[in-house]
Length: 358
Image 1 (cartoon, rainbow, N blue to C red):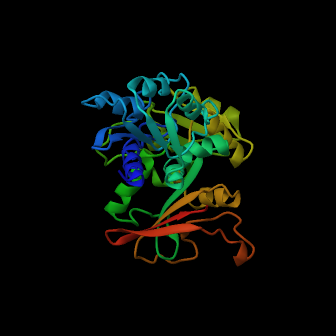
Image 2: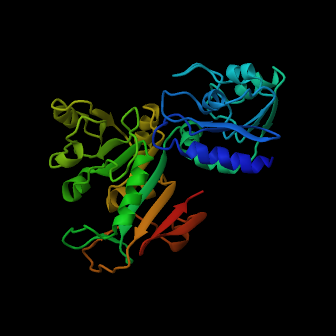
Image 3: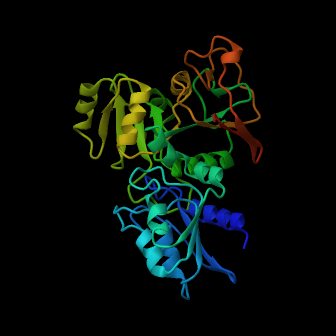
């Protein structure tokens, strides 16, 4: 069978775990022989069986002598679940094709070594770039020690996210807003500035979706406030779900938190330091929804990895209208932020610019 097509299938299976498996990676498994696919599986939710185990258990016949395709190296350590490699050996799989090595230092080649030392043939690197891209947030948490940062903004053709009176509902259409909720669903943290929360009163939670929730309650909601005050943000922060107050004024935030349930405080020295602390807490991805000031501060710090600019075919105009990106900006055009990869998606009359820095 065509090994690349089987890897594509494994990637499609892995994608089904988006929004439910983090901080674990998304993994899909395909077991096959010369007669075709025998069984499939994917990591369905955090704390649940891994893709390899699900594929083995769901096989309606013996998989002894069969081959397995995985988008990520199988684990060899005890975590929420037992290691996968002994079960692969026990099942009698004779060959494993892996898209990429696991960057987790607890694995990082040890899974491959375990299999080869027990006589199982291992191939690596099939659609490696595609496999890295799928789990780019997971990879970032280990290789850069910070979450993958995505900016999402709904804006007019002239780059405005609100009129001069602060009105912003609604610039984009319903299909675009549903897309935005899908982005929230697939993120570990949704971040906004306190001022944006006071004005727009977003929930920062995914809805309009018929999807199962994450076992850990992701996405967490993060309110970024230099003053430590989040008064007037009730609609965004009044529930008992995961809430993070990120501030450089820890005492003020603690005073507020005395009346809340599961909220936590991160006192940061810089934006990069904030991301490092989020990574330590187990958050692999951050979705920015905080408006022009938040977007500008992250662009100025060169910490945005991916953008979704959702454009509506309207012009708002006005010097006092709110721009999509504030901050210091660049001095010269040659210093402007550029995107090495990009695409434009249709959204029923709106269009979405999806760009990647690298």
